[in-house]
Amino acid sequence: MGVGRLTLVSPEALTKSSSDKFRRKREESPMSGDPKQCRLYAIRCAELANTAKAKQLKDSLLELSLNWVRLAESLEMTHSLLDEESPSRRTR
Image (cartoon, rainbow, N blue to C red; front, side):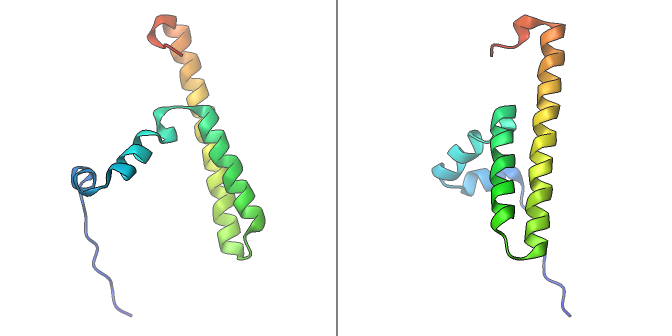
């Protein structure tokens, strides 16, 4: 069994070589800190898991769903702490 080559690419190189469409999608990602969007991704992963035939795929999608929920909860906690610290720090 052979070992494939692993090529490491910097994030800058990816951005430079990416299309405008990819950059727009990246900017709209839930990583901007929107718990609601994270929960929508969690729901979508759960829906896909319900239709998956392969057990490994189903398990992976359910784990992704749980991770999206955990991220949403973490973001909500962070937003709450920031609000308590200084309500003027957030504009939402």
